[in-house]
Length: 83
Image 1 (cartoon, rainbow, N blue to C red):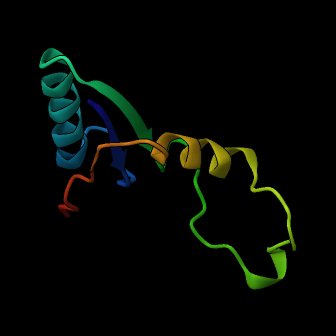
Image 2 (cartoon, rainbow, N blue to C red; image 1 turned 60 degrees about the vertical axis):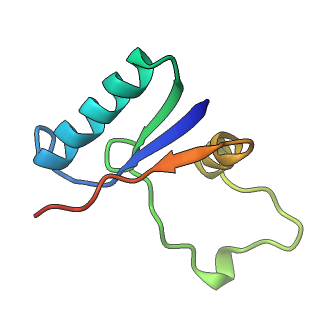
């Protein structure tokens, strides 16, 4: 099974990172294919101002990569946010 794990926490070494790393390791050991995105490491900007949405345009490369990873997934894992 292909599973996408998405992490959105600014501090490397955080509890959230530990949860994501454990989930990835466990899933891979169980024979799953894991795709991982650390949104802070990628400097992913979740805000898209309306003025920047082109008519019939293509998304920027990072957004396009995320869309490809989401296509055909059976499951996605979003570790909880723990402050």
